Image (cartoon, rainbow over all chains, first blue to last red; front, side):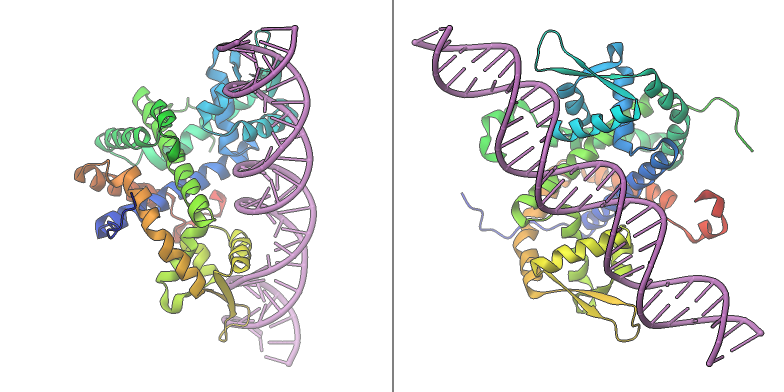
Length: 165
Length: 165
DNA sequence: GACTCATTCTTGAAAGTTGAACTACATAGG
DNA sequence: CCTATGTAGTTCAACTTTCAAGAATGAGTC
């Protein structure tokens, strides 16, 4: 079972790429967080929740569904929605078909906040990313990110591999 | 001054790439956080601090320097070092040449933790990233990340553009 | 139906993060 | 010197995230 062999360290090139990755991704995340905190009064992840809701049918989603698509825990979502509800941007609604369930619904006020901030946010993403990459690089980035996600996606296969959890 | 024109929205392809980016990067960050929290008892960023210290001369760095190279605020670093100090992995030392200054120094215990966890961490990074990408893709990723960082780097030029802050 | 087990969502406390205020020391100009 | 201003690091309060329960409902089995 145990692997006694020397671990395969990263090559020089891999180390450089890894550092560049960490550097760039944290800078971008910080940049977007600050931009949205300043302009919209919420962090990037909260903004993402509103976006998801805005694109859902009837502007609402079940809590679990929203958590899954935003890749956060249900607990974290509960707190986040509570905060957004205080802001008046989201409202909770009971699910008639499952009494345990709750919908989070985007309010008109929430929609308005989104309208006001979408241009600035898109501009920030453009300026940081798409306006700086060549068309080829955009394609490459897409391909690379898809490969990464495949390897990390919580797949159904994991259900058969409980020891990996 | 104000730009009254319609904002340039993202194309379909750009949207897909952006989503893939957010998806993949959050999955990877979560994955590494969990791996290190489980194996080493600290989040990824804290581990990164120990790594930086381990590579510095005399295994120590000034607080500001460490904060800068880890891309976090000095405030956050103060808290983080306080926690790592409690664990016995880092020790604070006064700076003789500047009485305001503090060094954070990696202790032997901290170095040992690093030794124990480096193989597992490298394996996780490999498995998630480098073992899944072609050599070309690794190069492409490096180039893309460097371009991103350039655009976000807090450059000296910003000092002349206070209105951008 | 009653029992068991899974699922949905919430809660509360601990831990972590942020931004601003604050202390202490350093540096430059008169 | 002395004053003004800048820098290093910490601290506080507000906020966010995590982790471990916990309450309520659903679903399968006998």
